[in-house]
Length: 305
Image (cartoon, rainbow, N blue to C red; front, side, top):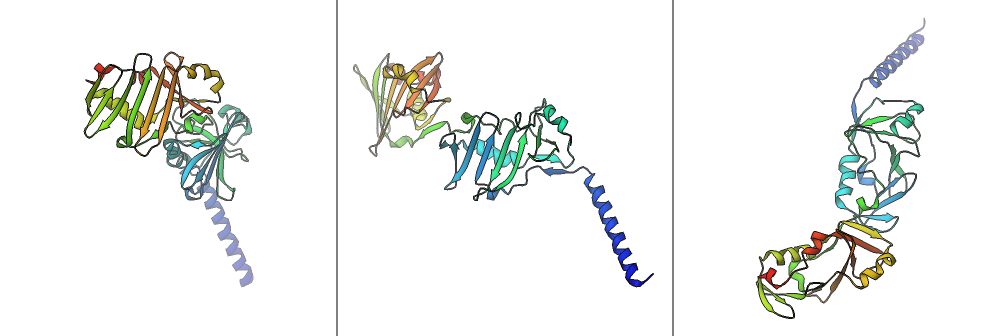
């Protein structure tokens, strides 16, 4: 046997050994990150199922819901995508490689929820079909072109959802407390105004005028509620349904600011204890609040003493 043949045989033996080691290593269970997308490159997130498609996009370093409509996003939910979904762990060994298991784990195209991470050039960085399981601590998932099904070590179904309510920011107005120059309230029981002056506020209605300590609970509830106006839910494209009620609302609130701008709220009964809120006469997006929110404003002079 020539020297050259011996070298070839030695190389072949080394390659066989490397192959066997790699094969053995692939069969050793390890915890890995399921998603491989570089978070710094993600500019769009698309979540879709058989009924709906939702798209979020990064604009000027802020995430915005861009489909099915444009709206500011809930920062908490976005953080969940980057901290929980992208970092979710799994075993490198799938729980199934059979297409017959797709139905069991709800990872078919029609049963699962598809999530895509997309870069600025519209290239898909990573994607997966998220299924459902009976466990509250795990989630099955597979990549669209593969039969391998993996068990994710956290339930991420509540994050990977096409429900737009989950993605929208529920704080619809945020202003500094000391920027408010007047609050006007008109309700069935009373009509009154609140205005600041140095360390006090003044309450005025058609019968009385009185000074109100800044720490008065009723005053504090009103100011804190309006300075960070947070709603309970969203009511889209239903203005005509509530138009008549909003024409004669249960509660009207005007907010005037020292810079000359102002905001106007109409609140009408929907179904007890839920109310419909219209903000700045917007007829596309309405909101829902509850009885306890309304009761913060339906006050009389005695509540401010």
